[in-house]
Image (cartoon, rainbow, N blue to C red; front, top):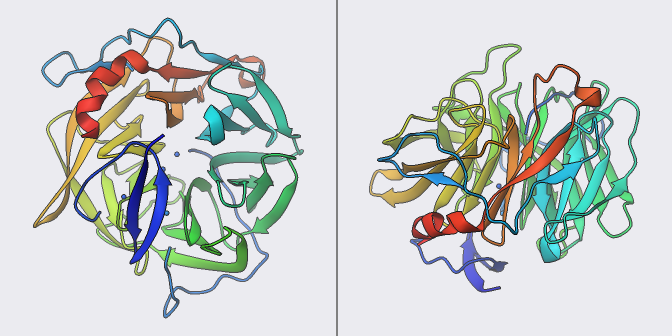
Length: 366
């Protein structure tokens, strides 16, 4: 695996992935709800935030059928599991969580096998998650009943190292881990949660910050979902989508000031769940269709960040995907199957939009 040196808010870090050369500028998926009260939140004002296939060409039909690689097959999850969030770990590992009971499974993209990492808890549901290599912790957003929580789980032992209650949370959703913090969207409150981390070890310092979303961010109507997927840019700027209003937004991690990114061509980003960025390519799960992923190419000019729609990725095996993880030239998407008649007896899968499509995606990553 290649390494790249990236400047993050004035600090140099080493990150694994495909080598990307760009102007100084970097980016991570979920759906369901929470509220809470434990460690008191700290206002960001004055704080020192240093916060981390199958494709169809634009000139073809917008939606197309994936021609999957014979070596890549969907990974089955337990009946009634109701997955929502997925993230990757070391050596092609993955982690996926349950809306049904908060269980977390660990698995391998290479072998397609899974094992239980944490047991289910009555009344618990989990959504977005991301693994931090420094601490070997999996950071997970979810809820215990109506209590919004963030968990930190040791992926070796399955031990829950932290269970953090979030005051006023209603719908904690997607997670982004960066060198100085864990960022979490709250889809029914127009703000972001930041948990402060030690940049050296990734350990939680005990501090919470709540960053209100301002500027061009659309106000979220009661009972609807706003901020959902979260990722970031090379300079630490946060990327969000909006499930109800649509669009892609940049957000300052210091002020919460949001700006809408102009998306050229294509059908438009009218909704969205998970976000996954690889190089200059941003994948928007369900950005315009229930069973597809929109691929955008990010670029920057004197007017700021822009995006160009490149492809719609789909497969007959997709069934209302929620989030995705890009690993080894493959975008693995979770079939959440929201709205299925009997979720407790339904089957669920992780679907690869895979290697053969990299021929199309490679040009986006340059």
